[in-house]
Length: 301
Ligand SMILES: NC(=O)c1ccc[n+]([C@@H]2O[C@H](COP(=O)([O-])OP(=O)(O)OC[C@H]3O[C@@H](n4cnc5c(N)ncnc54)[C@H](OP(=O)(O)O)[C@@H]3O)[C@@H](O)[C@H]2O)c1
Image 1 (cartoon, protein in one colour):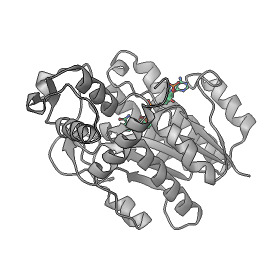
Image 2 (cartoon, rainbow, N blue to C red; image 1 turned 90 degrees about the vertical axis):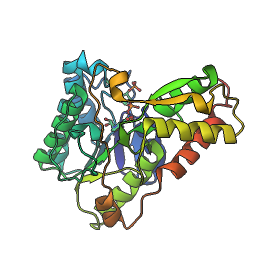
Image 3 (cartoon, rainbow, N blue to C red; image 1 turned 90 degrees about the horizontal axis):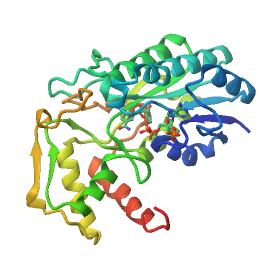
Image 4 (tube, rainbow, N blue to C red; image 1 turned 30 degrees about the horizontal axis):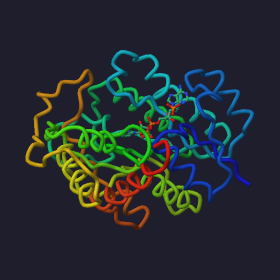
């Protein structure tokens, strides 16, 4: 049976990958206590001992604001780790799947970015993610880089869960309305990863860089509004008053890291490659929110 090494298995995407990719082989997903990915030597020893047939790297330094204070750690996780994995994958002739971010783009304009668009990150997180992508591309290994945006899921730390909590606690909220993108559930990323890997193994799908997001776009304010509407429809007791949810510009919500205003990703390349049409972000939110509300009924959640 094939051994698949999934890194970042406790993260949003990694957790879903452990479920989805189990049809391809035996998943090995060391947690942080078993393998600290900041330790390059430990990574080398672990990977060599495991001798995986495939590596899927969903680990990253994803604390965008904190990365401005910890650039070295962000660089280690987001740039050096993928480079290290890509070198191993190339030496052993095994495939590597890696995830990238909309934060690699400059964020100006209003056109959707295509995979060949010029990059221009404006944060430590974005520039370290870009360095990781470039290292994987330069390594010569067989790879898929799936570049996604605004990831959320029923588990983990994310905007949907934060909004649900705030909507229970407060009647009025101010939410940024001039950053535009597509909220992407981790479950969709994992499902598409499986399809793409399958296609890659069968020679139907070329390796390389693909955007991966639902169809349609919104702002954080629009995303929040839909979260509140669906939650209320599902019978959730919310304190928030829809008329008191104000849209504000990014300039009124300063953060240590600069965020792109335009995070629109053109997903036609992956649609052509897989012969699918990406679902709309609203239908994906309804599924993920439903899963969250069910999950939150469980003891301890
Ligand atoms: N989140 C987003 O909005 C977003 C948007 C675009 C692209 N992406 C990309 O999508 C991919 C998956 O993101 P995600 O949202 O699933 O991330 P996540 O939930 O933050 O998970 C990251 C994972 O990396 C692990 N990790 C970080 N540092 C580690 C270390 N030193 N040793 C061991 N494990 C370590 C974390 O372990 P612990 O669980 O122990 O902390 C966690 O399992 C990443 O490549 C990310 O850059 C994310």
